[in-house]
Figure 1 (spheres, rainbow, N blue to C red):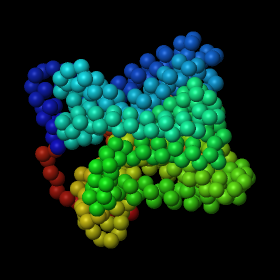
Figure 2 (spheres, rainbow, N blue to C red):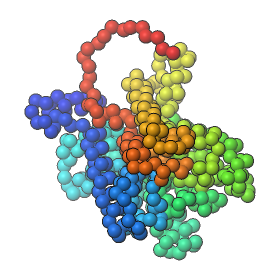
Figure 3 (cartoon, rainbow, N blue to C red):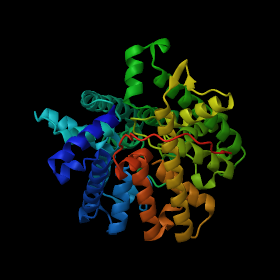
Figure 4 (cartoon, rainbow, N blue to C red):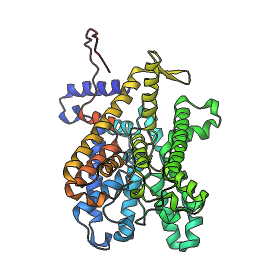
Length: 456
C-alpha cells in the first residue's frame, strides 16, 4: 500500500513539472535530517565550554554521529572529557536519534496546530514504517508517551541506587543519563569502563537491562502487551518478537556463562556464582543493541566475541530504539529456510503465512546489511593495522549501533573513523532504508517468462 501511494505521488507530481516535488523520497529526507543534526551536534560539542580540554572537529563529529545513531562508540571519554553542557548535548542527540526525528517533528507540528504538508507526512510514514498516514500520526503520540513513561520509571529506579551512593544532585543526574542512554539503546556511559563497577549490583544491572530490552522491543510490542494482557490475544508479530527475544537472551546468557566461566579476566575473576550469572545475563543481552558492559570486552574469549557478532548483527525489534537487521528479519529468514527444507512453497508460523514481498524484504535487508559489514571490514582492514576479530567486531558493533568495542575505536585514525561513522549512520537508518534512498520503488508492468536457474 505504501509503495502504491509513493508511486501515485511520484506520478502526479511529475505532471506538475516541479523538480523538487517530483523527487520526493522520504528516506533521503530522513538521512539529510540526520546529517544536519550531526553537523549541529559537532558544532555544539566543539564549543569551548562543552569540553574540559579542546577536542578536534573529527572527535566532535564522531561523538555527534555516535550519539544521534544511538551507538555509543567513543574516541574520547564522555564523563571526563565533556562538561555538563557537552553531556546534555549528547543526551539530546541520543533522545532525538532514539525516538526518531519524525516523532518530534510530527508532535511539534500537531501541537502548534499546523497541518502537515504531504512531503513531511511521507517522511513520518517512512520513519515509523507504517502503512497509513493516519497511523503514522497516532504513532508519534504513542511513541512520545511510551518513552516518557518508560524513562520516568527508569529514573526513579536508578535513583534509588545512585542517590544513596553519590548524593542527590549527582545521583539524580546519573540516573537521568543512564536511563536515557539505556532506553534508547545508546550505550554512552560516564565512566571509561562503562558499568563494570556495578557488575555484581543486581539493582542497577537489572534496571538498566530492563530499560534497554523495553526500548529494543519497541512501542508496538509493549503497547499491545499492555492492551491485550493475554497471550492468546496477542498478534503473531508480537508473539514472534517476544519468543525470539527471550530465546536469544537465554541462549546468549547460557553460552557466555559456559564460555567465560573459567576466564580469570571476566567471569572467572568474580567471587560468587550469583555475580557470574548476573554478569553473563548482562553481557548476553546488551549486544542487541545497548552497548553497555560490565565485563572487559577486550578480555572476552574468541568464542564469546564471535557469538556477540551474531547478536549485534541481529539487533532488536522493528520500530524500536535498537538497530541491526532486526529480530523479525532474522526469524523470517530462518522460517523461509525451514519451509524450503520441508518442501513448502509458503513461509508460515503460528498458522499464518507470509507474503512473498515480506520474505523478499527480509532477504534484501539481510543482504544489504551483510554488504555494508563486508565493505566496512574490508575498508578497515586496509586502513587499520589490527587483529581481524577486533576490526570485524568494531564494524558489526557500528552497524548494529551497539557501541561495544575491543579497544579499536581510539586507534582507528581519521580515515577509519570516517568509515565507522558511515557504518553507524547506515545501521541506524536501516539497510532497507538505504536502498530506498537510491530510488523510489516503481511497480513494473512487464512480466518475463520463467527460467530455470541452478542454486546451491
